[in-house]
Length: 261
Image (cartoon, rainbow, N blue to C red):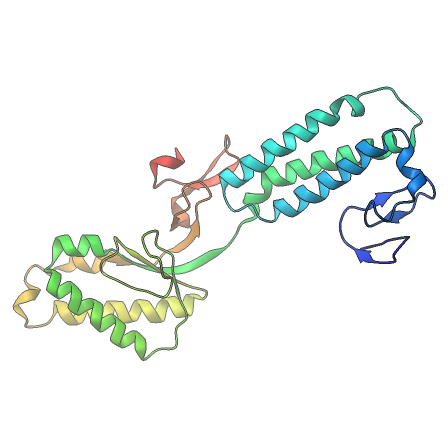
């Protein structure tokens, strides 16, 4: 936390320093006017503005494309200030400030490059492979299974997110999807929902309805319960066991989609 020497506002952004007193300021509007005429003052103030901008943008990075776009923008600033950093105009106040902030800027660049490694958001999921079900049992039976799952779910207080790629509603479950990735924050809720699905499957497998013909043990394998996380390349939520580290991307990426290879 910093405090502006002019307006006394407390702020958390990278501070501006003035040659007049070497104290911190929140903006160039608060900087003493005489300080703006010094050598390298313009370049210094612009570098502070760039640093503040990229520090904010780092928090918005969600995927590889975001990261690469931000790195490309930062590369331009790094290149622009390289001549000042390696120059020989020693003894100038604002050049010294640029040198210090330039090194901090390079560290911010490294932080951006590594920021997606910090993304540890995972969910406990129950995945229902509707497309495979449609290929194994009658569509009418699939709909019976779906309706029974919804009926049982209505009796439970379970908060979930459907994070499958082909749904527009996170609170929707539908056999029209390729698959549903029903995600929970706790393994206890995952287990409760898994038990519901399994019970419905077993009910229809053991039923007398002629639609059950062909409903064998393999159908029970068409839902499973992994821990999932979002791939920063393709954007899909996949089983954490299907991820591996890619040195070129400096990311842990999934092995399920060709876009990630």
